[in-house]
Length: 407
Image 1 (cartoon, rainbow, N blue to C red):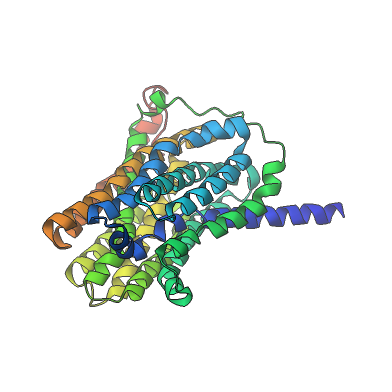
Image 2: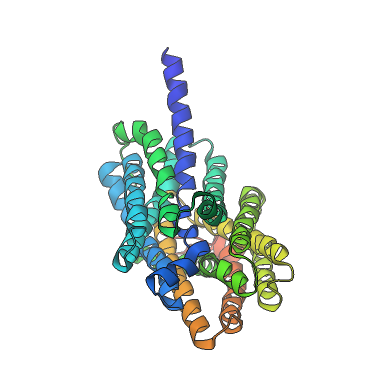
């Protein structure tokens, strides 16, 4: 009986972990396929529509670093439980119909996602210490699968149920509630002591590697959230039906998942991650170029290419956080810095692109700006992905001047 209880507890832990991972992107991805409908219903401009995603990503970046403080006070499992509760609340509030509730709900949901983003790698370390690589892959793939599922189903759900954008976007709260129920046994247990104290942020900010990793995280996030917010609208303006435009976003997320399942397994064994980062960046550039020059000609092809590039990029961004920090405490601190600065930078993307679209009257200028960001990702990947030069390994670098070695 005891063994059965242990087995059941393990199953609930794994299923709850998978469902928590799946909940970290639907609230973001589910809004863009119905963005035109939301803008028309509430009288929002293109910039105002883009601001919905911007508000979420700003909160994701600025408030995500609260997670280490909450984890030390309440434990990682209860922090994840609180995040799921806050997420469900924000999604429902966002869907109530008024403009203030739309943005406040987006902020609440973004805060929850930010907290869980930072907490989940710690959950992997705490519960699956001998399977960190496997469950990190599960975690990142869950992010992408959740986004793909929601973005692909929002418009068909409208057609099948007869509901409007409010009801179908509110449905993103359902899996969060289910995940809460399955995670409850973990939250009710006595919290595991958090003995490791991350390095002070003032020390972390003096490291060159912190800024290399943060730049790569921010640039790949920026290109990702531009497309997350505007891909369906771009394709609708190019002549595709609304449901097919939503499918395109779902397709790119599926391509991303293929990359997140495979790229870390190979790149993690390599001495240098630069070749992988270069290929991922070039694929992202190719996807942007295809959408810019011929969006309606081969939309599925552009989305697959873009998805492979962006999926590889996000997987590599999370991988190098672990590879470039010397110990678990430093991984936590580096992750907090990279995600905070990176996602705050990324939050500007949807807003700026929406404003450029509104001022120029088309997608050429906005996509050229996005393409420029993709190009900047190449040198950032070179700096963040390279191993430590032999001369630097032999040199004794002051831990205060540069606490994180290059490899």
